[in-house]
Length: 97
Picture (tube, rainbow, N blue to C red):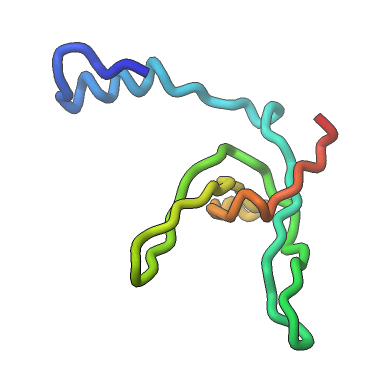
């Protein structure tokens, strides 16, 4: 991906972003089941949290005493409009594509 020509003025960046960012129609969005890792009955279990709409993959990180560790995420939208970023290994696509 190339950068906006002629520098990074706010107007040029906005025009460049508008020209290069694609949007998805709601009909193109995929449904997923989101899971969470809960400690129950003395052990960790993956438990279904609910159904959401997948928007995109992303990146996040967790910091430790000896550095940071990055991991892949899924950006999902719940039926109430709330958006969450969850670990990518905690979503399951359910629309059969």
